[in-house]
Image (cartoon, rainbow over all chains, first blue to last red; front, side):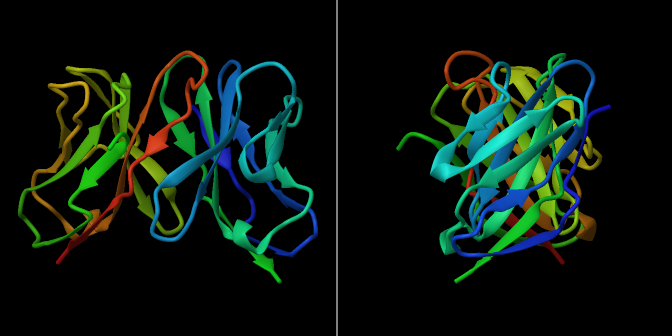
Length: 113
Length: 115
């Protein structure tokens, strides 16, 4: 069965500092991995994905994520956080055998000015 | 306008009533999904559909019914609403291949309260 874990309910970081939001997954076969962001009272927006190829993927708004197969992780990173990055972030995984996508519980990111 | 829309955006209903949440997308995406978002649970998949007239259960399908007679529409019906179905419901769509493959595009959500 597919599963996603986001071990931190909340991440606090100062503006200008690097940020990391953690995600680990479990899936049969090769994973398709995603990060989404949700701003207050809005639907989720796609940030980036890993399907195949380079383990470091770059996405919207300066975010990037690194796929680590041995650690089954897909952590979201940004070199320099902005206050406007404050939002709820979801990691998601889909197995290659189907199109059902499972989401993590979400991590709330607070960036302090 | 192109995109994915949901209606109503807010709904209050009473226990035992039937409620239908609407979802419409203009991209002709093959896949559509219904999720519910609750504190501490993230997004949980209720039902999904690979094409018109093809639907399947997700993680939490009990108490819900879906249909998909047209590619662009994917309504979700609560046959007899219960308080535990108070939640924010999101519809999403995606396409399996090509440059924008696999990621999902979400509607703005419907906040449902069952009293």
